[in-house]
Every structure is written in C-alpha cells, then in structure tokens.
Image 1 (tube, rainbow, N blue to C red):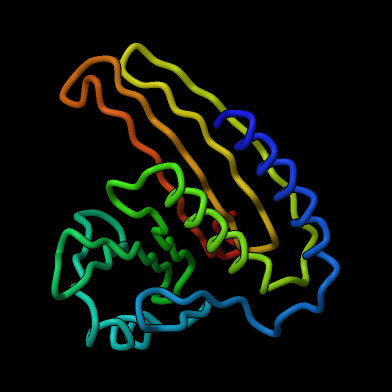
Image 2: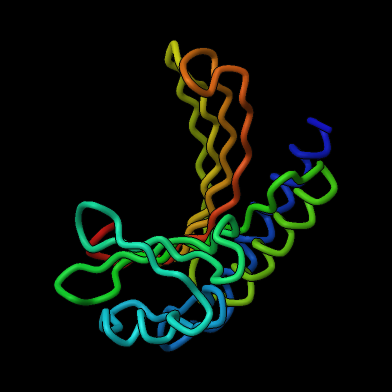
Length: 179
C-alpha cells in the first residue's frame, strides 16, 4: 500500500505540472454542496446560495461558517470564511467517513481530477510532518494558484483521542490576501 501511495504521489505531481499548461479560468470558483462559490462574493450571496441545501453554523469567532447537510448533520461539506463581507476561503471536505484504502484512492482521484480541470496555473506540492507528545500529523499539500488540495493523516498518542487515526482530503480555494 505504501509503495502504491508513493507511486500515486509521483504520478499526481507530474500530472499537476501538466495541468499547469491549460488556459486559466476567468474567476476562481469551487462547488460546495449545490453551490458554485467564487472568491470575492458577498457574504449574503454565498449564505443564500447554501441555505436551501445546507445547515450553516457560525463559529464563535471571526466570520467563519461550517456547512453541513440539512438531512444529516454528521455529513460535513466544509467551511466558508469571509473578510470585510467578502468570501476569502472555501474548504471542501472530500473525506468519506469510514473509508477503506480503495475508497480513499477513489476519493483522492476525484479531488485531483477536479483540481486538474481548472488548469491555468503551475502546480506544486509540499510535504510536512509534525509530532508532539499528543499527535503526529503528516500532510501533503498540492497548490495550483488559489486552489489547494490538502491530504492529512493524524495519529493520536494521548489525551481524549488516544489511539485514534484519521485521514482527510480537503480542497481549499484561498484568496490571495489570505495566502
């Protein structure tokens, strides 16, 4: 599995460089639930476009909102963040809960395919590992202009989540001001 994952990473980095040769889109956008969102949209327009399909939960600080399914609150679509009343960050959660390796790779393929369809930017990737007495996190980040694909694992060694292992795939659309 580790060898397959490394091969997939190498393939994806080569493919992402090829995607960078495509024509740019006029405006960076991302689909979250049933809404196409664009950086710079007004808070009112974004929240209204998500209101029919989603439950919006404002976080305690800042102008940040969790976006969840109306039918199943455990189904998380992602998060939107605003600055000065304008959309500056969209986080799309691609993770499928309870997934096995096959489902994980299918999900990763879908996320990379979505990233590749946008084109117009030179893409790069970075890896990072951090370890504390509580948790070890390993992260792979693909960056293509304002888009990011973040793949992360976490293993908890102590505390409330001791013994828990998680894997997530998130697609981000980030305003230049918040990069």
